[in-house]
Length: 82
Image (cartoon, rainbow, N blue to C red; front, top):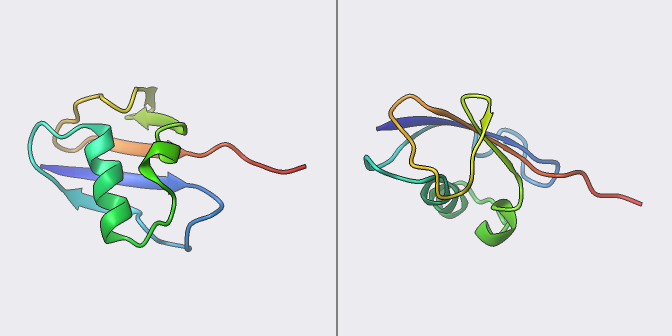
């Protein structure tokens, strides 16, 4: 299946990890996060990405949410600063 992924993070290389990912049917959000970190050079651990706001088709989901073909996954990391 094909899932569109958008990372909205300040600490990944520009244009890294955004786009369509072909992954097995029945994959979860966590599976897509793991795939993206392994294949797109994202240095953020999956355990940390799972603490981000995760949206599928603009609706909040958990990391164990099972994706469907053509879903759009947005990963929004909290801002840090001081």
